[in-house]
Length: 129
Image (cartoon, rainbow, N blue to C red):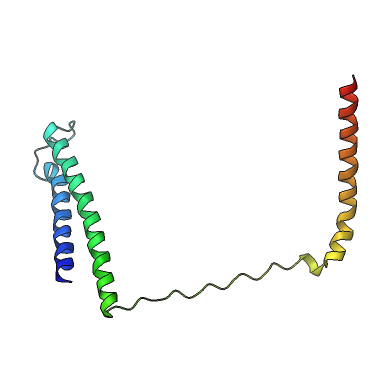
């Protein structure tokens, strides 16, 4: 467990060092204000960015391993999320039953059927020409 803690601290220090490399040219005044980045500034900034990203991954990995170790030892309890209740089925509009819906939709279905027949007959007439 001590190794994981030391690893997390070391990775955090590396993260701070990477961030310092990124801001050092601006903080120390080696980068002229308002000018294009010099080669030194570009090199330091992107080296610091790389170090910071690797260190951030290290911090996350060591912190996860440390948390897992604490859970295994029983020093930390994992909270269980409460199960979300299933949503109630949506009520049918105005309390209509399926028989009433079928009665209401019958004219629409018939109109669609007639439209399909008309289009099909029109397509056959086009093919004969």
